[in-house]
Amino acid sequence: MSHRRHISPMSIVLALGISWTVAAANGSMNWRLPANKNFPLVGGNWGNQRYSTLDQINRSNVKKLGGAWMMHLEDGKTAGNIQATPVIVDGVMFVSSGLGNIFAIDARRGALKWKYRSDATTGTTTHRGVVVAEGKVFAGQRDNTLIALDQESGTLIWKTRLAEAGRGFTTAPAVYFDGLVYIGVAGGESGVRGQFGAYDARSGKEVWKFWTLPGPGEIGHDTWEGDSWKHGGGPVWTQPALDPDLGLVYIAAGNAGPDNDGQDRGGDNLFTASIVALDLKTGAYKWHFQEVHHDIWDYDNSAAPVLADISYRGRLRKILMHAGKTGFMYILDRSDGKPLVGIEEKPVPQERRMKTAATQPFPVGDSFVPTCPEAGSVPAGFKSSCIFGAYWDEPIVMSPGTQGGVSWAPMTFSPQTKLTYVAANIINSAQSIRRQVWDEETQRFKTLGEGTGFFRPGGQPRAGTLTAMNPTTNKIVWQKRTKFPIGTGSGLLSTAGGLLLHGESDGKVVAYNINNGDLLWQFQTDAGADAPVATYQVDGEQYVAVLCGGSGFQLSQRGDSLWAFKLGGSLPQAPAPPEPPLTQPPRR
Image 1 (tube, one colour):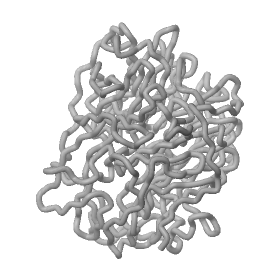
Image 2 (cartoon, rainbow, N blue to C red):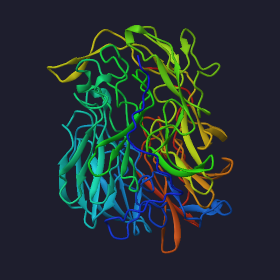
Image 3 (tube, rainbow, N blue to C red):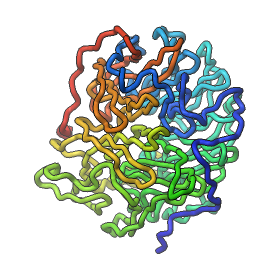
Image 4 (cartoon, rainbow, N blue to C red):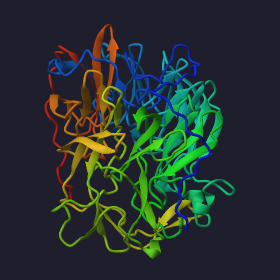
């Protein structure tokens, strides 16, 4: 069997900085550059760097940061998993609740301008944000639709169906470029055939669609056994990255389906657990890199890719970085998908009945979480294994687990320090087979027998890591162990003021020194601060904003509050909510 995993029709193009030169179609819009007064995208810019050039709030004065204003989005009621990044455009903040409701808010005072109430009733209650362009607010909805609202009034302009309601769901934020809105559909474990598409911003009409599971005659189709590609997953959980200079959009495709039963889907199962580069205008395939072959561990790509331009061995390189649930950082040349520092195919344990891949990619450098269970973390009576362990019907505890490593939390790249910063989970999982077969009548996977599948045994420790990594070596520069797992939470925002901003699951919003990870400031809010932080400037004042509503993934206190902070802010801290557990609760 060949284990050459890379297909590359493109030549290497080198550049310094984010030197994108293609003119934007939307007037003065230039989302190539880092965020400044506005925070126009959930990723800060098209490269998902989540870096702001604002420095009014900095290491020397961050202790003076206080509450500027706070508001409740849903009248104090629980509003799903709150994971949206505030998007701020010309003094107006646009946010969403986990229910898919959209809000426009005066970013200086916290006054509601309008609210769009979603009519979607199916799908997950997780929503990760919006994008604003051409006088419209674009957002996915949990029933697999894409909507456009009037930016000034919140009136619905158009609605487009992305996929059948109830077959998967849409959690990802949309991204806009040159008249097109880009978004994908999630839910790989529910029998979907993964997709990502571009839609006309004026009408909502589909311009192109890329199936993450290739059909007959397409590149990668031969990596699927029989017809398993038709319902084999490959969801898109989060937003893409864009490089207009190369004319490419980069997507992170997720888990295969069924997620922990590989018996009927022999092969590498492209493009699951892969980074895929597509033509911005046509959706044509350009290259891919698969991080996990024939994934049976739920090590899917759930975090957004990040772009940067760096000097490497005396040459200027355009790179893509992606942090995996595996605990590995994958660093690629984004012009052709070839590994930059190096990624080695290594043999892994085998289970013939699961049709495991003979090798898996191991990046050269450091992992940012342990890739074997830590001492004392495996409950009595369980066998254990390091990453990519083989399993069948006896549960085996592995690390990272299904929610280990980076399980969505966005990372940041600072052009100032030239380092990447990662928020991750240290969480084990017990893995065993749960037999699932496709049922043509119900068009769903049907479970046979009493297998347990993935679960987290009660009493296991839950923790995390905050890590600075050098993309030229893929080595750790500094690392802090965190009290709570942070890889499915707020992620990180870096600023020119020398700060890393982050929300904790106990409701604290914190600022770290970007040079060493030392805590400089914290502020107690009323619910889990598990959504990404944004920063912006209005009337000469810099603000920091974050949604605090908790998340089932983080086991944190639920709520619906939106907080903003500024230097000298006088709004007091809130009473502390109950802390999330530091060990895994017993199975119900």
